[in-house]
Length: 299
Image (cartoon, rainbow, N blue to C red; front, side):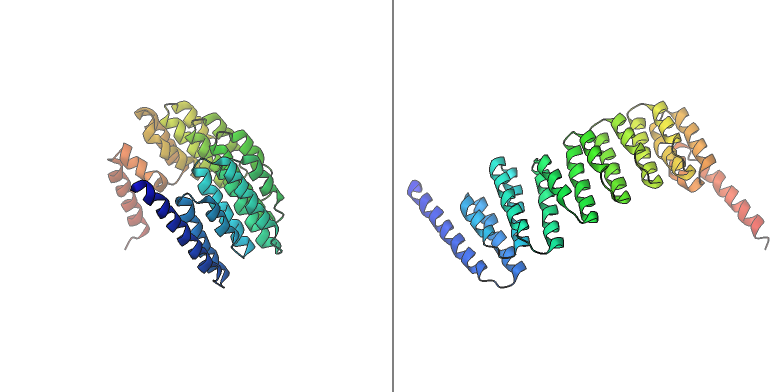
């Protein structure tokens, strides 16, 4: 009974998908049409009807939306373990993108495909597509996103080499900082420190070095952590880094480091840590502030 019912149910699902696709094709608004056809494709993919899923995406009339639809389907397919089909769908996405006459729209579609290639593990193709973008801000952000995925895949050196080709200083700094965090997540403190020192912008570099120092402090390397934090050039940023890592140092080292932070930076930067390590210090600071206020206002 069940054996005979299953083919009937499958045929009913196929008929419903075909009917829904036909209805979606009739929608005149490009975005609404794409939204409806992508919904049909998702249902078809979930129902193990891959041909119907691809046909529905291929029916999207707007080329940029069609490219995005194929890229989204490729990501779903890759998640299901079919890398060969995912790669073929990304090829379909590229064909749709290449048919876009407007350069900014075409390159936006290529950027999306490059990110998807990176997500599904086709890193060489992702990098090649990112480099093919001629609009500099978009090219920079796409390369940064691809580099981030490459770093997370365990190749921070390759990611760094890509980041160095980014011409936008802020985007390059952001990408390096993100790669530093990835290296720390992977437990590679040395690589993280090297990348942090390659950041040219003072504030992002200080924040990256502080993150590495804090990680070292938590990992039980107090001397190296302190040395790295003290290498931060800006006194306020150095004080912030020292204060943040102080609770993770041995008690004597923590108090000494915090004392140095108080000397070189504003006390407010150190207040949260100070209250954790020396709760009684709040009363002393309050008295000092009240005395200063009284002297400044004789009335």
